[in-house]
Length: 381
Image (cartoon, rainbow, N blue to C red):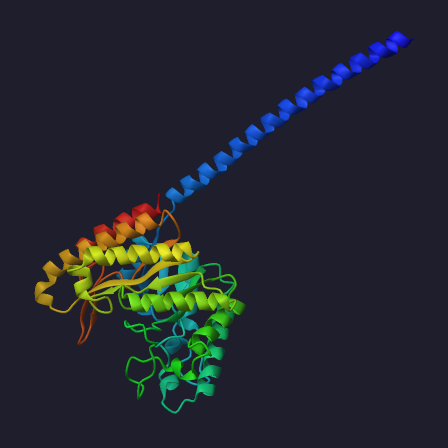
Protein backbone atom coordinates (compact mmCIF):
# COMPACT_ATOMS: atom_id res chain seq x y z
CA UNK A 1 0.00 0.00 0.00
CA UNK A 2 2.80 2.26 0.95
CA UNK A 3 4.74 1.43 -2.22
CA UNK A 4 1.72 1.89 -4.37
CA UNK A 5 1.21 5.26 -2.79
CA UNK A 6 4.85 6.16 -3.43
CA UNK A 7 4.54 4.88 -6.97
CA UNK A 8 1.37 6.84 -7.44
CA UNK A 9 3.06 9.95 -6.18
CA UNK A 10 5.99 9.35 -8.56
CA UNK A 11 3.64 8.85 -11.47
CA UNK A 12 1.69 11.92 -10.39
CA UNK A 13 4.85 14.01 -10.26
CA UNK A 14 5.91 12.76 -13.69
CA UNK A 15 2.51 13.66 -15.12
CA UNK A 16 2.73 17.10 -13.60
CA UNK A 17 6.19 17.62 -15.06
CA UNK A 18 5.00 16.49 -18.49
CA UNK A 19 1.99 18.75 -18.25
CA UNK A 20 4.23 21.65 -17.22
CA UNK A 21 6.51 21.01 -20.20
CA UNK A 22 3.48 20.87 -22.48
CA UNK A 23 2.12 24.13 -21.07
CA UNK A 24 5.50 25.79 -21.61
CA UNK A 25 5.58 24.52 -25.20
CA UNK A 26 2.05 25.74 -25.83
CA UNK A 27 2.91 29.06 -24.22
CA UNK A 28 5.93 29.45 -26.52
CA UNK A 29 3.80 28.45 -29.50
CA UNK A 30 1.20 30.96 -28.40
CA UNK A 31 3.79 33.71 -28.25
CA UNK A 32 5.12 32.77 -31.67
CA UNK A 33 1.61 32.60 -33.10
CA UNK A 34 0.79 35.93 -31.51
CA UNK A 35 3.92 37.46 -33.00
CA UNK A 36 2.98 35.95 -36.35
CA UNK A 37 -0.50 37.45 -36.16
CA UNK A 38 0.92 40.76 -35.02
CA UNK A 39 3.34 40.79 -37.94
CA UNK A 40 0.52 39.89 -40.30
CA UNK A 41 -1.59 42.78 -38.96
CA UNK A 42 1.32 45.20 -39.29
CA UNK A 43 2.07 43.88 -42.77
CA UNK A 44 -1.56 44.30 -43.83
CA UNK A 45 -1.65 47.80 -42.36
CA UNK A 46 1.53 48.71 -44.23
CA UNK A 47 0.16 47.26 -47.45
CA UNK A 48 -3.12 49.10 -47.01
CA UNK A 49 -1.22 52.34 -46.43
CA UNK A 50 0.82 51.74 -49.58
CA UNK A 51 -2.38 51.13 -51.52
CA UNK A 52 -4.26 54.05 -49.97
CA UNK A 53 -6.60 55.53 -52.57
CA UNK A 54 -6.76 59.09 -53.84
CA UNK A 55 -10.29 60.46 -54.00
CA UNK A 56 -10.73 62.53 -57.20
CA UNK A 57 -13.75 64.64 -58.08
CA UNK A 58 -15.03 67.84 -59.62
CA UNK A 59 -17.50 70.66 -59.19
CA UNK A 60 -20.90 71.10 -60.78
CA UNK A 61 -23.12 74.16 -60.71
CA UNK A 62 -26.85 73.73 -60.23
CA UNK A 63 -27.50 74.97 -63.80
CA UNK A 64 -25.13 72.29 -65.16
CA UNK A 65 -27.21 69.38 -63.89
CA UNK A 66 -29.01 67.52 -66.70
CA UNK A 67 -26.45 68.83 -69.22
CA UNK A 68 -23.40 67.39 -70.96
CA UNK A 69 -21.30 68.50 -67.99
CA UNK A 70 -23.28 66.18 -65.75
CA UNK A 71 -22.66 63.33 -68.22
CA UNK A 72 -18.92 64.02 -68.28
CA UNK A 73 -18.79 64.24 -64.50
CA UNK A 74 -20.58 60.91 -63.99
CA UNK A 75 -18.30 59.24 -66.55
CA UNK A 76 -15.15 60.13 -64.62
CA UNK A 77 -15.93 60.97 -61.00
CA UNK A 78 -17.64 59.79 -57.82
CA UNK A 79 -16.71 62.79 -55.62
CA UNK A 80 -18.73 66.01 -56.02
CA UNK A 81 -18.59 69.57 -54.72
CA UNK A 82 -21.76 71.60 -55.46
CA UNK A 83 -20.13 74.84 -56.63
CA UNK A 84 -22.23 77.60 -55.07
CA UNK A 85 -25.42 75.93 -53.91
CA UNK A 86 -24.26 75.46 -50.31
CA UNK A 87 -23.08 79.05 -49.84
CA UNK A 88 -24.90 81.58 -47.73
CA UNK A 89 -25.62 83.67 -50.84
CA UNK A 90 -27.90 80.86 -52.10
CA UNK A 91 -29.26 79.43 -48.86
CA UNK A 92 -29.83 82.66 -46.90
CA UNK A 93 -29.97 85.42 -49.56
CA UNK A 94 -31.98 87.93 -47.49
CA UNK A 95 -32.84 88.46 -43.82
CA UNK A 96 -35.58 85.99 -42.90
CA UNK A 97 -35.37 84.22 -46.30
CA UNK A 98 -34.04 80.65 -46.54
CA UNK A 99 -33.74 78.58 -49.71
CA UNK A 100 -32.48 75.01 -49.39
CA UNK A 101 -33.85 73.83 -52.76
CA UNK A 102 -30.62 73.79 -54.79
CA UNK A 103 -28.45 72.03 -52.24
CA UNK A 104 -31.19 69.52 -51.43
CA UNK A 105 -31.35 68.66 -55.13
CA UNK A 106 -27.62 67.90 -55.00
CA UNK A 107 -28.18 65.66 -51.98
CA UNK A 108 -30.79 63.71 -53.95
CA UNK A 109 -28.46 63.60 -56.98
CA UNK A 110 -25.60 62.27 -54.84
CA UNK A 111 -27.77 59.54 -53.33
CA UNK A 112 -28.98 58.46 -56.76
CA UNK A 113 -25.45 58.12 -58.15
CA UNK A 114 -23.73 57.04 -54.90
CA UNK A 115 -21.43 60.07 -54.77
CA UNK A 116 -19.30 61.46 -51.97
CA UNK A 117 -20.15 65.11 -51.27
CA UNK A 118 -18.07 67.98 -49.95
CA UNK A 119 -20.22 70.95 -48.95
CA UNK A 120 -18.57 74.24 -49.87
CA UNK A 121 -20.78 76.38 -47.66
CA UNK A 122 -18.32 78.02 -45.32
CA UNK A 123 -18.26 81.13 -43.20
CA UNK A 124 -16.22 83.15 -45.65
CA UNK A 125 -16.16 86.04 -48.15
CA UNK A 126 -18.96 84.18 -49.95
CA UNK A 127 -21.40 85.88 -47.59
CA UNK A 128 -24.73 87.37 -48.67
CA UNK A 129 -24.67 91.04 -49.67
CA UNK A 130 -26.97 92.03 -46.83
CA UNK A 131 -24.40 90.62 -44.40
CA UNK A 132 -21.66 92.78 -45.96
CA UNK A 133 -23.56 96.03 -45.43
CA UNK A 134 -21.28 98.47 -43.62
CA UNK A 135 -23.71 99.26 -40.81
CA UNK A 136 -23.60 95.69 -39.46
CA UNK A 137 -22.31 95.65 -35.89
CA UNK A 138 -20.07 92.93 -34.41
CA UNK A 139 -23.01 91.72 -32.32
CA UNK A 140 -25.26 91.48 -35.41
CA UNK A 141 -22.64 89.64 -37.40
CA UNK A 142 -22.06 87.19 -34.57
CA UNK A 143 -25.79 86.36 -34.42
CA UNK A 144 -26.00 85.98 -38.21
CA UNK A 145 -23.00 83.65 -38.22
CA UNK A 146 -24.39 81.53 -35.41
CA UNK A 147 -27.80 81.27 -37.06
CA UNK A 148 -26.47 80.19 -40.45
CA UNK A 149 -23.69 77.87 -39.26
CA UNK A 150 -25.99 76.10 -36.80
CA UNK A 151 -28.80 75.58 -39.30
CA UNK A 152 -26.31 74.32 -41.90
CA UNK A 153 -24.56 71.84 -39.61
CA UNK A 154 -27.78 70.45 -38.15
CA UNK A 155 -29.40 70.00 -41.56
CA UNK A 156 -26.61 67.98 -43.18
CA UNK A 157 -24.92 66.15 -40.31
CA UNK A 158 -26.95 62.96 -40.77
CA UNK A 159 -26.85 62.92 -44.58
CA UNK A 160 -24.82 59.78 -45.45
CA UNK A 161 -23.56 61.23 -48.73
CA UNK A 162 -21.96 64.25 -47.02
CA UNK A 163 -18.41 63.35 -45.98
CA UNK A 164 -16.67 66.75 -45.89
CA UNK A 165 -17.66 70.31 -45.06
CA UNK A 166 -15.69 73.54 -45.44
CA UNK A 167 -16.12 75.39 -42.15
CA UNK A 168 -14.19 78.55 -43.12
CA UNK A 169 -12.67 79.71 -46.38
CA UNK A 170 -10.23 82.41 -47.59
CA UNK A 171 -9.38 83.69 -44.12
CA UNK A 172 -5.75 84.78 -44.61
CA UNK A 173 -3.87 86.91 -47.15
CA UNK A 174 -0.61 85.83 -48.80
CA UNK A 175 1.47 87.84 -46.31
CA UNK A 176 -0.09 86.02 -43.36
CA UNK A 177 -2.43 88.81 -42.25
CA UNK A 178 -6.14 88.23 -41.60
CA UNK A 179 -8.45 88.97 -44.53
CA UNK A 180 -11.10 91.50 -43.55
CA UNK A 181 -13.93 93.82 -44.63
CA UNK A 182 -14.03 96.58 -47.27
CA UNK A 183 -16.41 99.50 -47.85
CA UNK A 184 -19.64 98.68 -49.70
CA UNK A 185 -20.92 95.24 -50.71
CA UNK A 186 -19.51 94.68 -54.22
CA UNK A 187 -15.85 93.93 -53.44
CA UNK A 188 -14.28 90.65 -52.50
CA UNK A 189 -14.20 91.04 -48.73
CA UNK A 190 -14.59 89.15 -45.48
CA UNK A 191 -17.10 90.93 -43.22
CA UNK A 192 -16.77 88.43 -40.36
CA UNK A 193 -13.45 89.82 -39.11
CA UNK A 194 -15.42 92.79 -37.70
CA UNK A 195 -16.63 90.49 -34.92
CA UNK A 196 -13.14 90.91 -33.44
CA UNK A 197 -10.13 88.96 -32.17
CA UNK A 198 -9.72 86.94 -28.99
CA UNK A 199 -7.07 87.65 -26.33
CA UNK A 200 -4.47 85.77 -28.39
CA UNK A 201 -5.18 87.56 -31.66
CA UNK A 202 -7.26 84.88 -33.41
CA UNK A 203 -10.52 85.85 -35.16
CA UNK A 204 -13.59 85.17 -33.06
CA UNK A 205 -15.59 84.22 -36.16
CA UNK A 206 -13.22 81.32 -36.93
CA UNK A 207 -13.44 80.07 -33.35
CA UNK A 208 -17.26 80.35 -33.36
CA UNK A 209 -17.59 78.60 -36.74
CA UNK A 210 -15.55 75.60 -35.61
CA UNK A 211 -17.25 75.49 -32.22
CA UNK A 212 -20.64 75.22 -33.92
CA UNK A 213 -19.44 72.65 -36.48
CA UNK A 214 -17.83 70.57 -33.73
CA UNK A 215 -21.06 70.56 -31.70
CA UNK A 216 -23.60 70.06 -34.49
CA UNK A 217 -21.76 68.16 -37.26
CA UNK A 218 -20.06 65.24 -35.47
CA UNK A 219 -20.53 62.95 -38.49
CA UNK A 220 -18.86 65.23 -41.06
CA UNK A 221 -15.11 65.81 -41.57
CA UNK A 222 -14.42 69.50 -40.93
CA UNK A 223 -12.11 71.35 -43.35
CA UNK A 224 -10.22 74.62 -43.01
CA UNK A 225 -10.09 75.78 -46.65
CA UNK A 226 -7.60 78.37 -47.92
CA UNK A 227 -6.83 80.14 -51.20
CA UNK A 228 -3.69 81.69 -52.80
CA UNK A 229 -0.57 79.57 -53.46
CA UNK A 230 2.25 78.06 -51.39
CA UNK A 231 3.13 81.29 -49.56
CA UNK A 232 4.91 80.29 -46.35
CA UNK A 233 3.66 83.17 -44.13
CA UNK A 234 0.07 82.33 -45.05
CA UNK A 235 0.39 78.59 -44.41
CA UNK A 236 2.25 79.22 -41.16
CA UNK A 237 -0.74 81.24 -39.99
CA UNK A 238 -3.10 78.45 -41.10
CA UNK A 239 -1.05 75.92 -39.13
CA UNK A 240 -1.04 78.11 -36.01
CA UNK A 241 -4.79 78.62 -36.27
CA UNK A 242 -5.57 74.91 -36.74
CA UNK A 243 -3.48 73.98 -33.69
CA UNK A 244 -5.06 76.80 -31.69
CA UNK A 245 -8.56 75.61 -32.61
CA UNK A 246 -7.67 72.13 -31.42
CA UNK A 247 -6.24 73.50 -28.18
CA UNK A 248 -9.70 74.98 -27.56
CA UNK A 249 -11.27 71.55 -28.00
CA UNK A 250 -12.67 72.19 -31.49
CA UNK A 251 -12.35 69.56 -34.18
CA UNK A 252 -10.40 70.18 -37.40
CA UNK A 253 -10.11 67.13 -39.67
CA UNK A 254 -8.42 68.54 -42.74
CA UNK A 255 -6.94 71.54 -44.51
CA UNK A 256 -7.82 72.53 -48.06
CA UNK A 257 -5.91 74.39 -50.77
CA UNK A 258 -7.94 75.99 -53.54
CA UNK A 259 -5.20 75.74 -56.22
CA UNK A 260 -6.47 78.32 -58.72
CA UNK A 261 -3.31 78.34 -60.86
CA UNK A 262 -2.45 81.77 -62.36
CA UNK A 263 -5.03 83.50 -60.20
CA UNK A 264 -4.52 83.00 -56.47
CA UNK A 265 -1.55 80.69 -57.03
CA UNK A 266 1.05 82.88 -58.76
CA UNK A 267 2.14 81.95 -62.26
CA UNK A 268 5.86 82.37 -61.59
CA UNK A 269 5.70 79.79 -58.82
CA UNK A 270 4.11 77.17 -61.07
CA UNK A 271 5.99 77.95 -64.28
CA UNK A 272 9.38 79.37 -63.29
CA UNK A 273 9.76 77.80 -59.83
CA UNK A 274 7.78 74.58 -60.20
CA UNK A 275 10.30 72.30 -58.45
CA UNK A 276 10.51 74.58 -55.43
CA UNK A 277 6.73 75.01 -55.30
CA UNK A 278 6.13 71.25 -55.45
CA UNK A 279 8.57 70.79 -52.56
CA UNK A 280 6.54 73.29 -50.54
CA UNK A 281 3.38 71.37 -51.39
CA UNK A 282 4.98 68.10 -50.29
CA UNK A 283 6.08 69.67 -46.99
CA UNK A 284 2.59 71.07 -46.38
CA UNK A 285 0.95 67.68 -46.95
CA UNK A 286 3.54 66.04 -44.69
CA UNK A 287 2.70 68.53 -41.94
CA UNK A 288 -1.01 67.82 -42.36
CA UNK A 289 -0.55 64.05 -42.10
CA UNK A 290 1.85 64.38 -39.15
CA UNK A 291 -0.92 66.26 -37.36
CA UNK A 292 -3.64 63.75 -38.27
CA UNK A 293 -5.20 66.02 -40.88
CA UNK A 294 -6.47 65.12 -44.33
CA UNK A 295 -5.19 67.23 -47.20
CA UNK A 296 -7.66 68.45 -49.84
CA UNK A 297 -6.94 70.17 -53.14
CA UNK A 298 -10.35 71.80 -53.36
CA UNK A 299 -10.59 74.02 -56.46
CA UNK A 300 -7.98 73.14 -59.07
CA UNK A 301 -8.17 75.03 -62.37
CA UNK A 302 -5.84 77.00 -64.66
CA UNK A 303 -6.47 80.59 -65.73
CA UNK A 304 -5.58 81.65 -69.29
CA UNK A 305 -5.68 85.42 -69.75
CA UNK A 306 -4.45 85.55 -73.37
CA UNK A 307 -6.54 83.22 -75.54
CA UNK A 308 -4.14 83.63 -78.49
CA UNK A 309 -1.67 81.46 -76.52
CA UNK A 310 -4.26 78.82 -75.61
CA UNK A 311 -2.43 75.81 -77.08
CA UNK A 312 0.84 76.73 -75.37
CA UNK A 313 -0.96 77.42 -72.10
CA UNK A 314 -2.74 74.07 -72.15
CA UNK A 315 0.59 72.30 -72.56
CA UNK A 316 1.88 74.18 -69.51
CA UNK A 317 -1.30 73.28 -67.62
CA UNK A 318 -0.74 69.60 -68.43
CA UNK A 319 2.81 69.74 -67.06
CA UNK A 320 1.70 71.45 -63.84
CA UNK A 321 -1.20 69.04 -63.33
CA UNK A 322 1.14 66.07 -63.87
CA UNK A 323 3.42 67.32 -61.10
CA UNK A 324 0.57 68.06 -58.68
CA UNK A 325 -1.06 64.70 -59.36
CA UNK A 326 2.19 62.82 -58.80
CA UNK A 327 2.69 64.54 -55.43
CA UNK A 328 -0.88 63.69 -54.41
CA UNK A 329 -0.55 60.05 -55.47
CA UNK A 330 2.70 59.69 -53.51
CA UNK A 331 1.30 61.38 -50.40
CA UNK A 332 -1.95 59.41 -50.50
CA UNK A 333 0.14 56.39 -49.45
CA UNK A 334 0.76 58.00 -46.04
CA UNK A 335 -2.60 59.66 -45.31
CA UNK A 336 -5.90 60.96 -46.63
CA UNK A 337 -5.69 63.09 -49.79
CA UNK A 338 -8.41 64.34 -52.15
CA UNK A 339 -8.42 66.27 -55.42
CA UNK A 340 -11.33 68.36 -56.66
CA UNK A 341 -11.40 70.17 -60.02
CA UNK A 342 -13.28 73.46 -60.10
CA UNK A 343 -15.58 72.74 -63.07
CA UNK A 344 -15.03 69.94 -65.58
CA UNK A 345 -14.74 72.17 -68.66
CA UNK A 346 -13.72 75.67 -69.75
CA UNK A 347 -15.25 78.43 -67.64
CA UNK A 348 -15.23 82.04 -68.88
CA UNK A 349 -15.17 84.95 -66.44
CA UNK A 350 -15.64 88.31 -68.11
CA UNK A 351 -12.73 90.66 -67.50
CA UNK A 352 -10.57 87.87 -66.06
CA UNK A 353 -10.08 85.19 -68.72
CA UNK A 354 -10.79 81.52 -69.34
CA UNK A 355 -10.41 78.99 -66.57
CA UNK A 356 -9.23 75.69 -68.04
CA UNK A 357 -10.13 72.27 -66.69
CA UNK A 358 -9.99 68.80 -68.29
CA UNK A 359 -12.48 69.38 -71.13
CA UNK A 360 -12.44 72.26 -73.60
CA UNK A 361 -15.28 74.51 -74.79
CA UNK A 362 -16.41 71.73 -77.17
CA UNK A 363 -16.27 69.17 -74.34
CA UNK A 364 -13.27 67.38 -75.80
CA UNK A 365 -10.47 66.24 -73.44
CA UNK A 366 -7.66 68.76 -72.97
CA UNK A 367 -4.02 67.64 -72.49
CA UNK A 368 -4.52 68.00 -68.72
CA UNK A 369 -7.29 65.38 -68.82
CA UNK A 370 -4.72 62.62 -69.17
CA UNK A 371 -2.79 63.92 -66.16
CA UNK A 372 -5.91 63.74 -64.00
CA UNK A 373 -6.68 60.26 -65.34
CA UNK A 374 -3.52 59.06 -63.57
CA UNK A 375 -5.02 60.22 -60.28
CA UNK A 376 -8.37 58.61 -61.07
CA UNK A 377 -6.68 55.28 -61.85
CA UNK A 378 -4.61 55.51 -58.66
CA UNK A 379 -7.80 56.01 -56.68
CA UNK A 380 -9.41 52.90 -58.16
CA UNK A 381 -6.58 50.50 -57.25
